[in-house]
Length: 162
Image 1: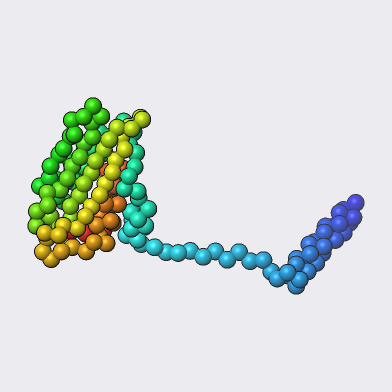
Image 2: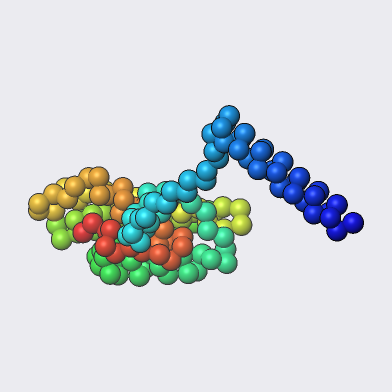
């Protein structure tokens, strides 16, 4: 009985070898070629910022912290700013940078009520009064960086054009 089991095992091994050999000869050997792209943490942050929308929803529970982050950002990066409320029955809060020459970029953040929370909108423009005038392409990235900070609490200072 042991001899018969040994013959069956040899036969199965032989069949497997033949199947593998024919697969390699007829269809080419199958190989798994894994490629990895190595990117730096700064590049990861840059990609995350580029994917961040500047118009987004924040639920009521997270809004207090999100609005605090707006104030922190303006205190540090655009210290002269104004807060507006339109006073209508549907309150809308806005914070704007003052268009002074020392503010190279002008930020605008607004939030308006939405079902279950607030809809935020973040914008950034080059300040034409600044000398020398800042590059306009950086304004979009700044707006996305600020939006990411408001929404997720992550600000990449090294990618914030000033």
